[in-house]
Image (cartoon, rainbow, N blue to C red):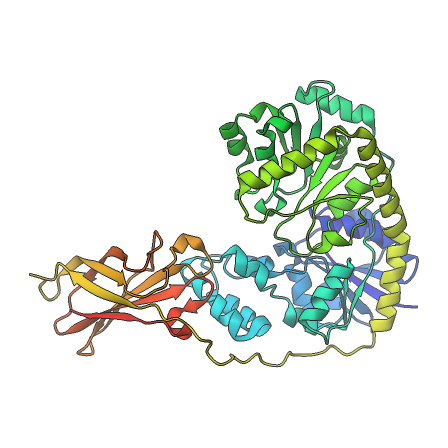
Length: 531
């Protein structure tokens, strides 16, 4: 019989993967010799510990047991990551992007470990990763680089095999690394009873929602990528003037739904419940006529919260994007992403689609029924456990692919080097040893546009150094942001407080491109002026 050591956050830890594990474990145990591994610093529900043998990570894999790792994209999975790096096993990858996890365990811990962050990106993505880590030196890690560099290769190549929950995820991983052994398995989602209309009506009354008013629902941790802010904007359009929105889930500090609702005058129709217990979440789903489960960008996860909504028979709108395209058209409504990224136009398009759906109750009923049938057919926990066990049997003796070949930097691409001139003002009367705020003018004499720092990818920051030509050293200033784009022929003027050395010196200004590194690497200049 297959002998598995199950390595994952477990209840009562507050994470979707712990909830998933609780649903899967009984069915796994019916098909293998199962043992739980308690993660350091994370409790295990006594009811689980009483049901199955539970050991520490020090005993992981003893007696030729196969580790089965559950890996997600937050700090709760650091002990899983550490164990998987030490001992090969089969790894269930719940999020294809692990960059956020990398940030949390390096730069996210004071004082920040830039060297570890850069080293991991270099291991996983070669010279591109190393160059992309450069902006973190001044506290900038843009969204683009977080999703473009998933920071997973080293971890996955150390495993006997990798399991994911969608065909799209299989294609993504194989396309990135053909040597990986990757399989898709169902996600275990028990089929609950259908929604309780009475419970939904009671919550509507408690929130002061008028009887018969259409209600949208968004559930789970609210980050910008869940697009709930676009739904709030949609409520301000004429098509949705009488629609309410229930948001059940903690709101990230990076999105201000309450402030946006006040600004748009829809506060009375946006109901922010915050983090809620499971019973209250069920009531919020039951209170919603149409649920929203939008994502952009995505970490490649198969959303357990989405499947639970579908399982109770609630019609749901998803983004026509990435893994959501695997869902059958009969079970969900797929909406395209905004082409131009403009939230106002995206909200207008969303409002039009949502209004049409809310006006067609029979369509919503058919969607809900098909959604429930899809989950019952494809994500039955017994079926999921059987697929996991079969995959583990096949992969148990496979050798990990091992370290990936080094990714060498290709020949330098053609680059229209930015041309410019540097002029230094207020030098008169500047005595040796005196500190003075110099006024520096940087003129764009080329044909290209210099992008402002706020632009993110490709935006410019300046590194300013005063180099003592007599060997007295270098004074380096903090990074200087460029607040606006500089057109050809335009200027960027800034001040630099510097102490004059005793002899001759050179003021050196080097542009760095956000998420790309030193512009000199791409053929760009370092501007210099004599002092």
